[in-house]
Image (tube, rainbow, N blue to C red):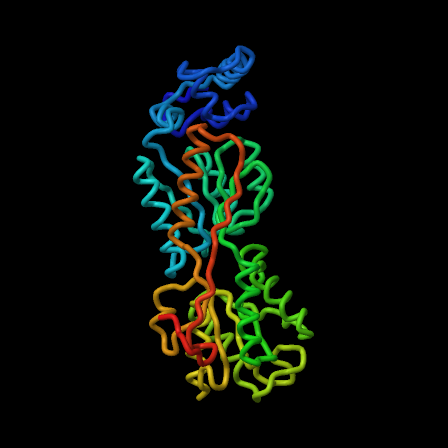
Amino acid sequence: MSNSDEGQGATIYEVAQRAGVSIATVSRALRNTGPVAAGTREKVLRAVQELSFTPSRLGVSLAQGRHAANGIVFPDLSGPYFAEVLLGYEEVASELGRSVLILSTRGRAAVQDLVRDLVGRVDGMVIFGRTVEDAVVDEIVRSRTPLVLLARDPVERADAVSSENIASAEALTTHLLGHGYSTFALAGDDDRGDVTQRWTGVRRVLSGHGIRPPEPLPCELTVEGGYAVGRALLGGRPGGGPGGGPAGGRRPRAVICADDQVALGVILAAEELGLDVPGDVAITGWDDIMAARHARPALTTVRQPMRLLGARAARALDELIKGTRTVPNSEILPTQLIVRSSCGPHPLEEK
């Protein structure tokens, strides 16, 4: 077969996989641009012959690591959080001379096949959260395609960039307990990633204070999702159940939300129900999107470096593509508790 036409025949990734090396090594072996052991070069040439590989213009650009495309997989492109992360990624990718192919999985069928197709068209991949099944992530790792996992637990032989979640969730919960709140609700699905880590921190502190942690009430991480879960949580009688959740139709005294959009939706629901925030119910979020500081009441939240997350992922992927770093790295960016008025009165409210 021939790869003289783009999109047909073997790819540089298949050559790398057949030879058991990285695409950077294939590049050096074919272009004599760097040191390659004789045995390794022989494996590469044998794979090239077996696959009848002929570099196309796209293949050459991938091998050179210049002006090629990076692939990034997001669960959704709506909302300020994803927009900030993507903006940080695209700014750095552009600076590095790379275009970006974006796959949003929201509402898409056959997502895993779409991801496999994207892998064959880019020189490296970034995968956000748990949008891709573990088995497919493992396939990408085994193909030696440069891979960075963003806001997802680390995987062996892949880079990971994420924000700190557990310690900040502990600080947030400790702060709420300091107000005297003893009945809590959690709004947002466990996602086996960032949100799950947040609930881990919340549960740890509540359990340490003798409060049985509530189960998170699932909802989409949107204002609409927060509004729906807010109506369900806050429509009962005041006082909250002894387990810390809305037991027996009682509403919680504090609602900890998985992100700011959910929290803003819960605030809307509270307003419709005639409840005062924070007088009747305290509400907190996560991310510190722009709307959090301009909401009324201003939202207590945890600030994470959204744009920096994307930027660090782009630079990490570039290092892997160029072969300047071959050892996988896991980077955790710091977060910060931001105290505002939605959780109660404070002498010094951060604007």
